[in-house]
Amino acid sequence: MIQLQKVDKIYRTEEIETVALENVNLEVNKGEFLAVMGPSGCGKSTLLNVIGLLDMPTSGKVILDGKETFNMKDKELAKFRNEKLGFVFQSFHLINSLNVLDNVELPLLYRNVSASERRERAEEVLKKVGLSHRMRHFPSQLSGGQCQRVAIARAVIGNPFIILADEPTGNLDSKMGAEVMDLLHKLNQEDGRTIVMVTHDENMAKETGRTIRFLDGRQIS
Image (cartoon, rainbow, N blue to C red; front, top):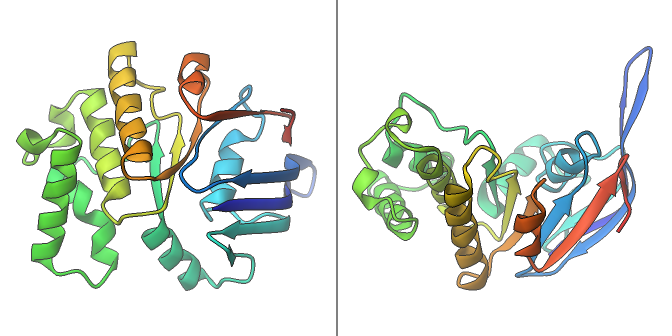
């Protein structure tokens, strides 16, 4: 499902060169739940951004579902991200001026999906994450765990084959974090979503199928 071949990512300015990823070779199978761990600044989030086509590697190949992404144009990349990838972030990235239902519908606005179908699909995924009773509420009226469940509903409404989660429990207490992990497991086991999750939490990583570790931009285990 995901293949990285000899991937490097180097950030350059006039004065300094920073190696964010170095010679990363990684394969993630369809339906796998993978945790990525390592200290701050080791390249975890850069790795997620490269897999998610938010950042292009300096060299190497990123192949998603058998498709080589290096030569894709900007519009093609945006379309691929919108249709095939779902993103969940530590800080939720919800729009405070929109209610829950409208936040979840957002990814479908960029597709040729009617308003009635958008609404129907948003209601369906909100039911799945246990927030049918909160559809008309705004993010400021929700707990952190509820906001993250809204973010997950938004990530899966387009039926992506890969979910990329960057510290999805990082801003939550242990109870809410466990609820979010339960939901991710449900999406993985029942829906067959492939999930790559960056985390600092050893206990969360132990719940996944496999853990890889990074240090100074290199995969060390």
